[in-house]
Amino acid sequence: MTKPRLILAALAAAFAFVLVTATPASAHARLLSSDPKDGAALATAPKQAVLEFSERLDAKSTQIAVTDSSGGVVPSSPFTVDGQKLTQPLSLTVAGTYTIGYRLVSEDGHRVDGKLTFSVQTGTTPSEAASAGTSPSGTVPSPLKSEVKSTADQIAETSGTTIWWIAGAVALAVGLFVAVSAMRKRNARRP
Image (cartoon, rainbow, N blue to C red; front, side, top):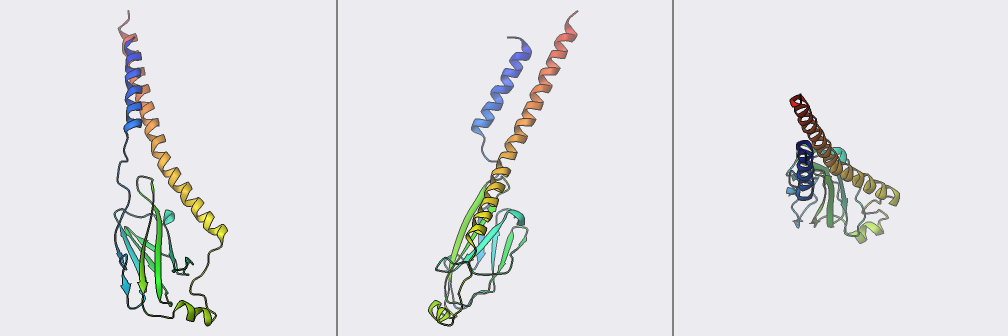
């Protein structure tokens, strides 16, 4: 086998090894703290929920939803993102258990889903709210739910595969450069 072919074979083997054994460059984002804390039993309803993560958040690819004990989405103002902190304003008037579900995309391109639950002791009970003709929670139409999920899936898939395309392109460019350089040196040595 000639030297340029040997170099190309070695580069191809090294690239295949990297693809097979690669691990993510960074760990997935994880929830560091929250207010209210997961499992908290609060005497009064909080005005906001603050979640702090291990990585900076991208507001465009971050989603959050607050649901009541029946699974209904609680209407709320838009959340804000400041670095690693996500703040969700809350307007909870009904006593009960609430779940905050979140979805975000880590810096390494992987989607992270999580949730925390807390309960509120003061406020109207769900049966009082129903008899007064008010709904304790809002509903999100099914098409909107599937559209949001579909968008988050696309973001996660695109971010994850983009890294591999870039790595492959860089490896191919380096391989071609080395092969062309080796051929030029070999041709320069010939009389």
